[in-house]
Length: 180
Image (tube, helix red, strand yellow):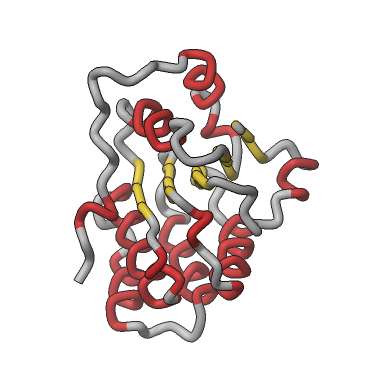
């Protein structure tokens, strides 16, 4: 059973500051494999990305909490967020995640990428509060995810600190959009 609020974009508040310069920078996010937004608590990471995401359709949102360090839970929510973004395009992967029929997160992600190979529109996956992930297996699996994700998929990660995602190679290849 998945909690709907963990897969919902925060509603844009009427009295929030619109940071035009940062939104302009994010407008080119689809040209990058990873958009990484880092700053301390209360600096508006979630609000910024919520404003940016407001006009996008093919976007999945996953808000993390400490319980998401369980690999099976992480897998279920991440796949559900992708399903949300693709209107259910990755049915095989969803079934695998729900029934826990995969050997590892990387094998599940490999199946996800096979299914996403037929998705040709720009696609965005937002993972909020990544600093709460402490499980090294999840970090390694997300490094695999970033290395092998389809070209039309942009991963947007919000964190209070620099996550263990192996971003040096992305930086060198100009595949990383950093705000923070």
